Length: 186
Image 1: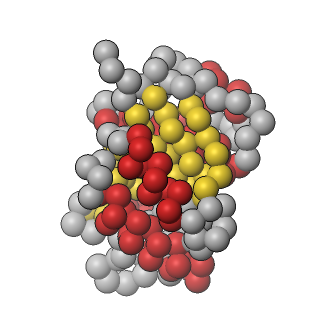
Image 2: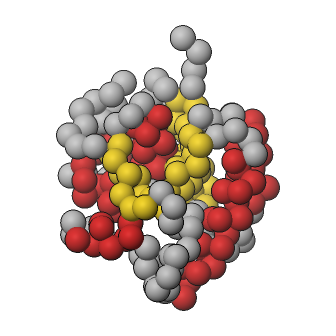
Image 3: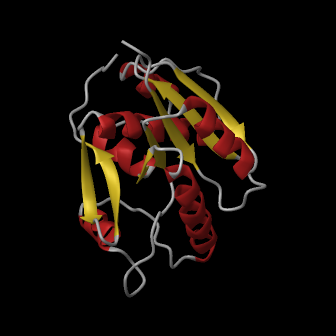
């Protein structure tokens, strides 16, 4: 079977700040690095042609008010995604929406997730050994942004295989999280 690629992005609000990037293969090989600027992100997606890109950033604005239904639903579950009404989140949301529009042109599905929610749903700690237990082959010495990107990449793969739940209203925006329990996959 041909290798399939999935991308996870821990997107920074400003393009000059580091964005965590993960390329995850269907066999569990996980490559991570820090990207600076939209060009690096777009080149990565163009080169690897992933089936799905999961982004740790809001991909839509609320229809009305300050929060989206997906955020309110997750708050009700004890999860804490940040709403766009916070100052720095506005810049992040603008960048994420702009980038997702471009990324869709490359044929990948673009989804929104958030790593803290993934950790809580799957009962994971913040360290790399927790990712190893899921079967991800990832180096131990990586930045927090790369760890978050790896979790986003995992959600992209899980979404493609039908092992996720979408919270929210598809017309306004959804946040995708894994279906627990999750065992070693690779």
